[in-house]
Amino acid sequence: MARSDWPASRGSYAGYRRATRRPSMMDILMLALSFAFFALAIGYTYACERL
Image 1 (tube, rainbow, N blue to C red):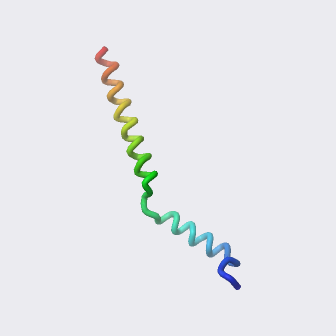
Image 2 (cartoon, rainbow, N blue to C red):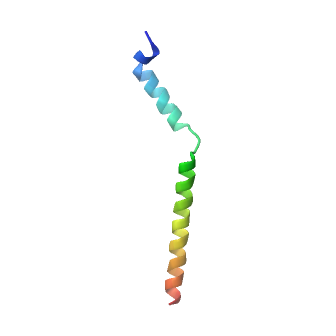
Image 3 (tube, rainbow, N blue to C red):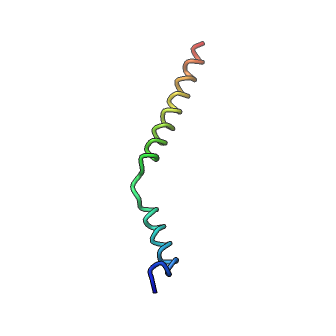
């Protein structure tokens, strides 16, 4: 029986690898963009308050 004939074990291993992976560059980029958006929103709020 070939390894490709075992979809359950291959799928569970793939799910395990996906769950334990290191953060990718896209994850870090999205976190940075989210932080920048909230910082700009807070700055905009302070600027509008001064008017």
